[in-house]
Length: 102
Image 1 (cartoon, rainbow, N blue to C red):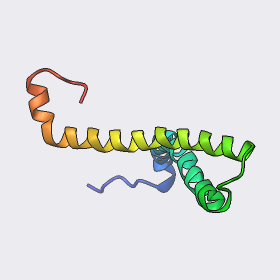
Image 2: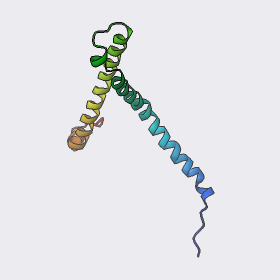
Image 3: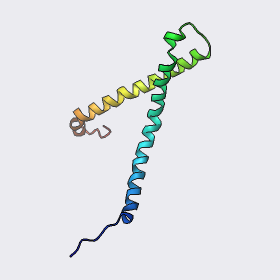
Image 4: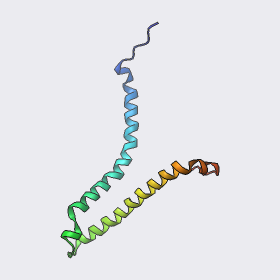
């Protein structure tokens, strides 16, 4: 008995569904990480401490707002690493005492 032939066209819906799932998982990550990279690039280009240390005005306001946004991203990075370590190290212990959120 010969194995059924599967053509490329018959597997297309499955490939499209898988690509859609990957895209749905990747989009939130991109929307969250692209602004971070833009923020770091802006810090690199503007260099307030070296080029604009004694200036005032809107540049200083924008710089301070960018610093507040960077604090948010810094907290997110520290929290994500801590959560990953907690899941890796203490997942069994937390499961035993009934914590299912980790």
